Image (tube, rainbow, N blue to C red; front, side, top):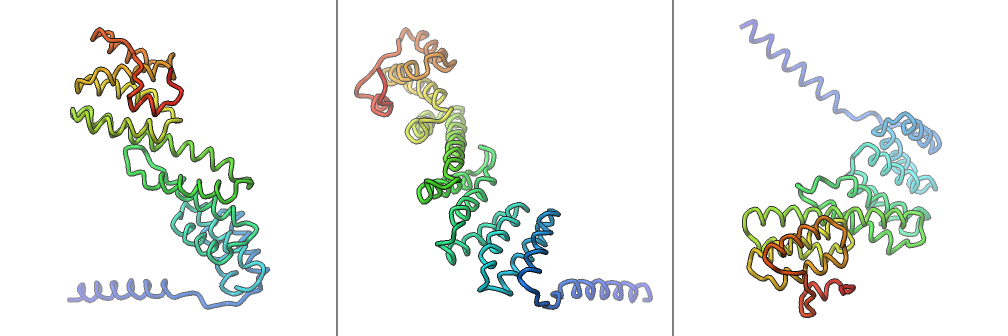
Length: 268
């Protein structure tokens, strides 16, 4: 009985301690300078949680001051530095909605894009963040082509495209391993159509050659090999395709009616 009472007392004390820890700190009004200074100090010390809190207080206590918009943007940056990308995005969305004409609006759009870009995952996983990052980076280049962020956004768009193309290639290769050659062709064709400037195109063309040969359409395989040889003559993928065709007594051959001929405008 005594042991049971001791246990109940312990549980009660833990519960009381938890309640006390959730009690909000008393509201203390401070000047905008005090709050901003405390937030900046926290940023320097890489205490991003405290920095975000102090910047939020600037906006909360002094919503009409000239510091409020700047503090909101800095709060988003603090969340970003702390890998709290959802919190950063939410803060940036509010900033964009409230301050569409702010001098730093281009940076707000750019930072919002980075929140998704930083979450790009391995090609074996879902690529929703990659697509979202690319869409938002395009928004930066469209809205602010002369901003200092446009060039970096373009570079990151290229990297995001390469990532998405890599995902298509992975799925296509999986379909091939399952002997679903029509489904595989759809993935490889998408790489050619949507991601023609990426590093995955030579392999995609070779896989198209393979797929067409496996489903018994050698004419299309010959065209794909011709496109591959014309655009990437020194690649290992062309050598592999050429070897495949030779094994069936075929040669790379241009076909004007082929989808590939129309897709690659610079084919011979």
